Image (spheres, rainbow, N blue to C red):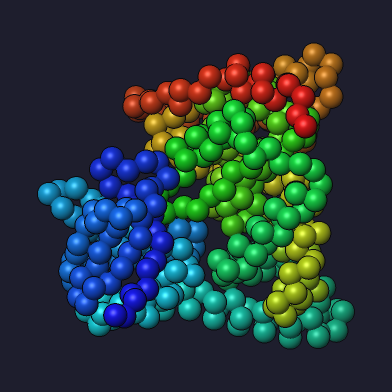
Length: 371
Ligand SMILES: [Zn+2]
């Protein structure tokens, strides 16, 4: 008997949970079998499924199909996708090739960009000055070419750095609350990860690759899950729009890019340390607010939470408390507040599903001493 390779994936369809239901995919000749545990939930012909690149920068593979007007989708991460492609029958394989080509093209563009930068680095200082005058568009150009695999590596080193700096809370009400909010906010194709850091400063940040870190201090200050969701949606928008990467590239300069090109990720941990202190431009903040708002609406979360939380931060500041860290990187300017309020007013009436998290219990857990 020949054992068939099995692939882990997440299934999205009627009744599946927010983050998708874990399933296993197996090929039986021309048939794709989707299994949940030992139970077979779908058996599909190769020609029935529609492949597409998904996730942050198309790193993941999605297979979609329709049964009785219900849309179904399974999502494989990038590693599983490559192996899956190899054993797929020809009927699907030739349709998977364009998806793989998109991913290869991103990688190739990145290598070309690095090669050009290497040449620039060899230029005399005077010419380099000219290059630096164009630092902003240059950083944008480079950032557009950073492939998801590099983005993920940066995220990993940021997470390692965060762990080294202090404890993460990985169980209990605060951890669970954050996972619930995160699952609702993340799109089916997004592999976002949410962590609570056991730190008192009121702060949160998101790293490339979709790693979101929230300090216990921020959760304690909030009065509801919706307020926290507002902050998270804003932070996720910074990742989506690659604001952090852009700042890193701009401040790190060509030298670090070259070590990146050589596969040396050691320096990235250093950048990660600064990530929670990175200050974005006004335009970037406005963009993240508006993108964050759309995400909240899409997730059916009350979008007024973000504005409420910022008002609260300001009152903490006004009452003589130290400036909350999150405000030093995300100034709650009049302009920003006005734009946020205007956007809220313009929103059509939206469906809202409460997150249903008992926030006093989350706070109490954060205030009780931990071992
Ligand atoms: Zn921001």
